Length: 467
Image 1 (cartoon, rainbow, N blue to C red):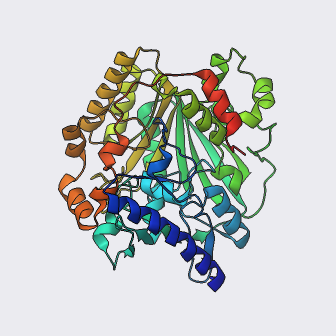
Image 2: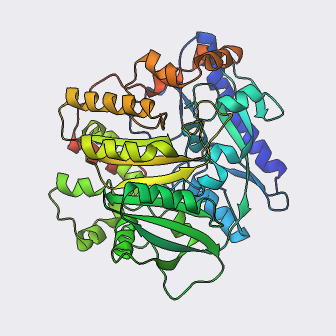
């Protein structure tokens, strides 16, 4: 239940944010929102004099199991939210795969996961936002109040207002998830199985393509009891999930097992899906089960992001999530095969969003399928940019959108060809955002060449709270 003490503590924290935001507004200076960590792959440069600090907004204010909603501050991590709700028999409808992703970050960044074919992205479960506007005033946005603001917040990357409170729907959950692994032998078969299973009664669907001719589609459903075939993914002795799934799908026969619900939600945390395997080659360490066990404590996503930002290595990799209409997914995977040859690929079906025009799922289709393409690109900087520009062009031709946590190299006209510039500018002007906050294009466009340093990456890990 909500308590007066919690709300007073919240109000005190919001007052600090209001004062910070108003000060930038009065000075007509641009500022960025800082919440303590980030899952963007762009260079995380911070000017402490130009930050609105919301890192203290990390409390769960109310859990209402009768009316099935939760009220949380934006810096509450998915790990904390799951820990609060699961013992009560509930969960967020969509839980992004990394425990340190925050509610506010998931909303503003367009996060989804394997239940998104049913529920959409995280923002689609949010019924109301409390927002500090650029002039320091507090307002509420919902489907019945300030609808234009409500529809503009998702995917806006903190460019319209500062979220200070979120009211989110919750759904019933059980202690375990029964997961079935189904092998597929082609891109088309993968898309066909995903499409078929979205019309079934399962609760979760995602897939991995390990090559053009081998992949696995995974279907999960909540269950009450642990079965004889059981797996976990949080212990140091547990292997990375994508390798586990590969083994389970090798013989071509369906395989089922139960997984604790929290382990399932964060199954990709260890190894950052599979991107951390590149660290083994950087440090000349054999990629074996023993080495993965020895270095398990350093291979969680929060630590990996800390190293990535410190070392400024992201321009050595393609790290992109591409949302596509289902009809275009095979063509995009063929493009990858012929031009980038990056594997594995992650496949995740998502429900389209017809209202949030900055969302990566604002696509006119029955089903959106996200293709996660994360891998090493052995190119010099100019070639790296060229490859990214070619990728962006292909995505636009196929009617897709990138998730904007990633590197974006669009020109400004190209960017606004994909998004509703008129609606966005009108909303920013109405709520004074253009005075205080950089635009979503300014925030997501990468214009500089990074100077990598492995040493600085290691120092970043040592100086960061990555527990």
